[in-house]
Image (cartoon, rainbow, N blue to C red; front, side, top):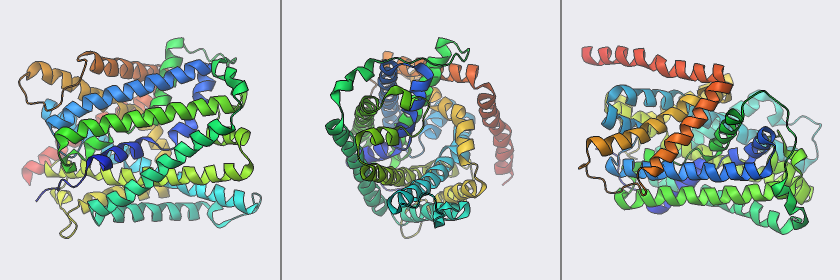
Length: 451
């Protein structure tokens, strides 16, 4: 018995939105402005980043409708290039790709709630329960266990909660945009065309722009979220392309409007190099009480992000176990709920370990390069299959081929090159962990053969 197709178009769209909108959009604009010193360049990079995400979504729509199974890149690389590349993408996804963001998101969620409690109670200088690091970690573990358990007890039940959280997330973002536009002083519209002096780091213009775009793409990550649950989506030939395009375009529009509000609300000098862009902009626009509830809103946004990662991530583990790339018992479905409960438990366990060790954010930073490699390889594989098997049944074909995939590949390689040039040590560490999966793969194959 396999996973049932219980997910409709609406849920698939909301999965993508939930996977994309996290803390990234509220943290990156100040850093990008600090790197480039130009508000128009910041807006242009958000537009370019959105175009990259849309191009990637269109390419993945072709891959996901050609092979509508759970597992995302693992499935596509297996079908195109064989088990070794598939194992490597699964290796990185399993160890870091989903568990580390779940751990990071749950910790950030607790910290934002703690900040909200301090702001509304007026006890910013006094100790509260969640100020203690171990209480924060305990609360984060409880969040992980709650959402893991929720997605074990049924795809439909988990989807209902996930959809509700995502709709609230969209409403919060829309409220920030709407209230921000109402409160903004359009006499400062010139801020959107302003430039600011920046420190000379010695980096080339190519490296600066590539890195700035890479930071923007951190906020856009998640556009491929529906591909991991393709085997559970009803009528995938129709619903997958629509979901991926609609979810990505909706998120892109929200991001552009948010950044318009941020750059209009606050002077660039106040934003440059800062993580807390939303809080700074809110401070210029609203009374303190409204700013306090923005903090709570970001916490709610993180709830949805943690939930969706717990929903889609275990599908990679499940797909690998089905192929004996992991212990076969990890492909077991719950006898009552029909969910990959052991795979969910593995992701829960890894995320809890990262929370307790305090290593999740470090892993996300150091493994970012490796995580960006496999979508590019998958899109290259899509083009390769167009050449190798032109007669292969493809229910959906990328429009404007080959320009759309070439746009995605070209800009992604540009970002990775900039990362290698500037963040050499972290990028090489990421590559090293990726390559460490090769001997693990061959040792595992020997184990499977003996078994």
